[in-house]
Figure 1 (spheres, rainbow, N blue to C red):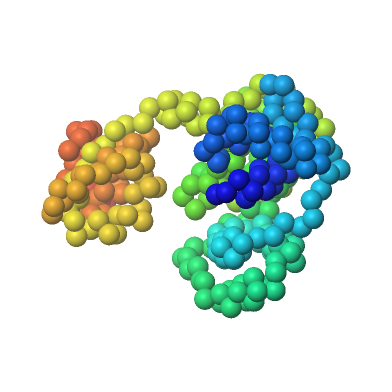
Figure 2 (cartoon, rainbow, N blue to C red):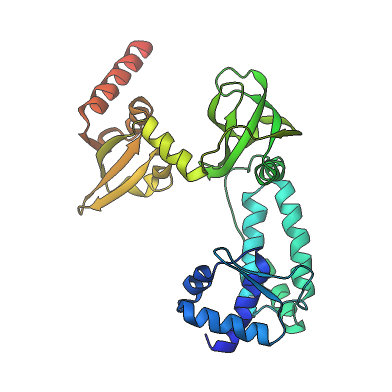
Length: 311
């Protein structure tokens, strides 16, 4: 990237956040801090009102706006691909908001770029098997995190199916196993809890400030992993079944694998030996357990229970 393009990109980056650290700019463009300072000075000399805050970073004075950004054809193509993914893998509310944003993006494209998008729009398709659960409360939860205000939630429990009302202080949201999850401090349980967004039946903002000093989402996930004492499992699959495993292994704590020709040795970290054993049984003689021995015992126990049930 030449210097002119880099300076323009830095200006866009400065407009994208309230505060941008010099080190973040340096990391993004793989340049030195001295070069960052020089490029920022060039923007200032060009009339861009940049304010440097000691120990924080750079910000652009409130009210300053550039004319509409011009996108390259490659960037415009990426937008179309992202739009297809959003339409298939998010809920209706997110699709609607993204579609509104895309109208604004298209409005600043040049004529040839608009024509290109129209030509490729119908030649990119995304297929999936499962319908994405409704995540219409995601924006409200993110707003709660940003405002540091608790929310009242009606939630349907997984095992009992019972609806409970509780006040929660959201920490963060993550996606796994085809579902969005919310990590929050639950005042009903007086502890952190993991909630699935599709089981939320009602949500209401409150004026209650967060009272609990929150873990970050990363800190929570580390604590969760340690608390659940994940068990290391090593199994060997016949290579004939590996293509069927590739779509499932990530749901069971997949960590690593080793190709041994006719077999593949896989390592998993699982919080539940019993749950893992029931999955392995479906592969019959096409899988061998190396460790732990407790997994073999659990599989034998489950097979015996099935035999007694059906005989």
